[in-house]
Amino acid sequence: MRASAITEAEIWEALREVPDPEIPTINVVDLGIIRRVTVGDPIRVEMMPTFTGCPAIDMMRRDIEARLSVFGPVEVVVVYDEAWTSDRITPAGREMLRAAELAPPPRGGIRLTPVRADPVPCPYCGSTDTQIENLFGPTPCRSIFYCRACRQPFEQFKAV
Image (cartoon, rainbow, N blue to C red; front, side):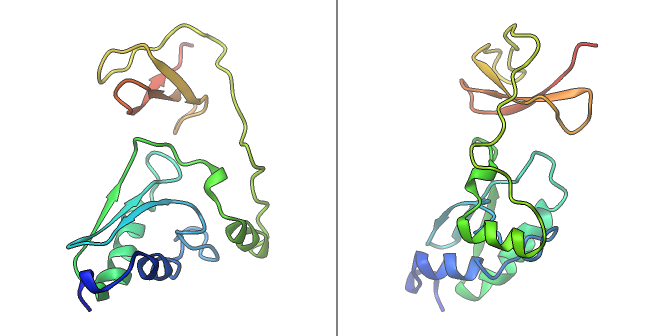
């Protein structure tokens, strides 16, 4: 089937067959990591990782490409300009987590406030219009920030 003959709804339905590699009882749509689907040549899928540096990104990209390849060429783009939050998990996804004996996160997330409120300059554009996204980054010595000016996430080493 050619990409121009399919609908966006068909692509979304096919994506529901792609499981998360780390929690296979939930699919990538209900986990909320698929931000956008564009039907064209190629089919374009925008995927938001649950966190920066997620080790399953490449596997999910390959699984999505494999599932959608029956429709034509596929381009999976990992986007970082918007942070994934657990609020993106659908009600069906929350039930899938419960079925896997995992407690779904509460809606609204947890808002952490940094101890130090001095502005943190963005290493990409130098703007101080930044906000802390997560006090605890990929390692205990780093925090994750977001630059509102250039829309890039970045890490900061904590002052010790």
